[in-house]
Image 1 (spheres, rainbow, N blue to C red):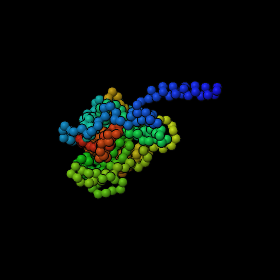
Image 2: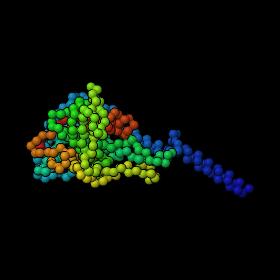
Image 3: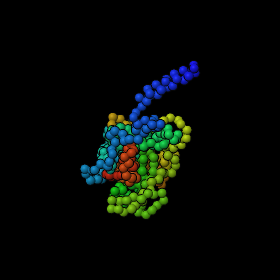
Image 4: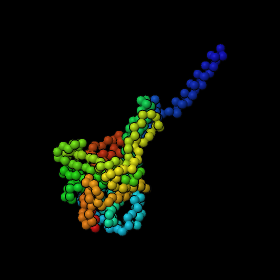
Length: 328
């Protein structure tokens, strides 16, 4: 009899606890509620993100910029208030996908070139493809968060070329690929190359031009190792964990130092590289000459819009305006 009373009381207590707990849960609660709530936070566009490609209000242009000679190199700290930048001329170009204004400046010493890039961004995106724990399956799954990026694309085939995929002309380019999550923590940009060919090349993807002509886009990292590695996790370590961890880059992949700081609605990113490197996969600079470049705030792949990402335009980037930079 005493055992029966005990079990009855215990059952009532458990029932009351269950009812109280249920009242605190959202209406769409399931066995994977934690995952669902995290997914809603990570896997949806951030406030202020662009959901579609913005129609341009003016045609693309080519701007002319001078890289000013200086005796002492700036500190690569992602700050615009350095006196060097206050005295340096700038141009403002437009991003292809978002049509945001991008201001760029350049200085150089006898051995190095420096660029400062500044553009508006409502909020920083500093996570990338985070791993979220699926409580149903007991595994980690890749989330839809994407990091902020800034890509400087240098022509390696002269200055009379269009670097855009919208008006494609076969070309080869040197890519300085700054990534807010994967490269910024160690103070580098990912040094890569891009080849657009009218015939198939290894590890390339087909690209359709507006006139329906097929080109082939190859994107490769320079020789060496990047500034991050990818981890594979099979046991639970938390609801959300990083997929990428910082490393010291090596070889040609480590040619470009970069540091970006988000402050009060703006990213400011400083880049540094030797004028001359010993690597054939780099554009080589000489004082007194001019070099063609473009800038994109989204990865250049000619991919479509993906509304499920935190940044739907993440891989829909391209070059809009061109800049002819003269190293004085």
